Structure formats: C-alpha cells, structure tokens
Image (cartoon, rainbow, N blue to C red):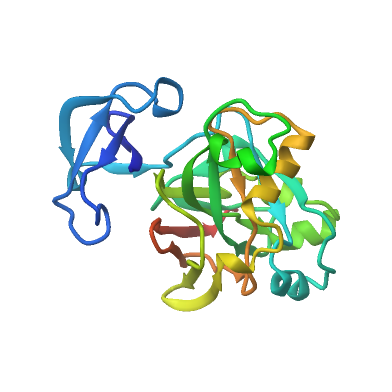
Length: 263
C-alpha cells in the first residue's frame, strides 16, 4: 500500500492504483481515518483526486531520524574514509523534514550544499534490542530521503550535527510503501536531469536487518522514527536554483528545488 500525507486537509490516504502518482494524475486517494502509524490503516468512505492535493512528507517523525553514514564502500572512498567496521550513526532533527517538491533552503552560513540520495525506513512501533530475525516486525514501510548536507560546515566542524541539521535538510517522500521489499533496486539521483548517483541497494555494507539490530542496541525507536540507510557514491553540490530528483523503483521519485543562498 502506498500511504501519503497531503494538504489542504493535512490528512493521510492510500493511493488506489498500482501506478499511483507515476503516470496518471487522475488517480484517487482514499482518505484514512486518523494516523495510520498510531491508529492503524482505517479507510474512510471519502476519496480525493491526486491532482487536487499537494503531497506532504509522508511521515513527520515525532521523535528522531537516525542516519547511517559511510554505508556504501564507494562513498566511503570518495570521502577519503575507510569502510567502517560497524554502522556509523548520527541524528537529524525532525524539524529538517520537508516533503516532495518543497524548497530546500540554502543557509547563509554555508558555501556548499550537497545532495545524498538514500532509502529510508519508517518504524512501526516502540522497539529496543531487536534481533535480526524480528526486524520485519518493526518496519512500517519505506520511502526516499535526501540527506542534504552543508559539506563545508561538515568539514569545518569535524562532526555532522550542524551540517546536516538545518531546516529543510531532510526531504522525504513521495509516499510510504508498506509492501516494498529491498533488493537490487537502484538509488538513482539526477541534478537538473543529469545522472549523478546510480547504485543498487545490494551494495550497502550493512544491510537493513543489521542496521536495525545495531541502532536498537543503542537506543529505543518509536513509531514514526525514520532511519536513513546511507548514500552511494556520486554525491555533489546542488547549485542555487537547481533541482534534485531521487528515484527508487517501487518507491517513486522525490524531487526538490534549491533556493538561492540566504543573505
């Protein structure tokens, strides 16, 4: 099922076509009652046309986004880093989240703002110390993320909180797919139509079960928490006014434009 959030109602809904949001703007959204993360998937009797709404980030974490760094060997290499022996994790604030087609705001203190296309996991319930064989029990679904990074500030600070924590620095969307099974689908990122990243999910150093097992050995995850699973090689700057699009087969395409640099 493809679960979306949309305005003007600020509601959740289900895409009712297998090709929802890809080819046919006459697709209908079946409006849900309540938040599916907390009250389950409870359809109402109302529908609305996709063409009549604006899609929002499909989830706004009430708690946190946990990100995995250097999870593709070629990306670690392009960052002049060794392949890590265990997952490298960091946090992004939930205030960084925006949705599809929302504007990425260029902070005035940053000189370079980069894209990082990633697969994201949405957590379904409170969980701690999840063993490998139980990981699927805590996954609500998957979506696409852009781990936007002020690269010059990351280098200057020697850590990642400021560089990755600005408002609008975590686009998510366009929907959550509850039936997605990660395999050899590729993360494909384009900048102004030019191919920048193309790497299968199978190239992850730490696979999804290992990631969730590791993170939950460190901290408790809550419903709606989001895990970003790392970016492949090919990251780079997004000039002011450019448009970045990230696609994963089965999850659609997440597109965002970049504002001019703030004065």
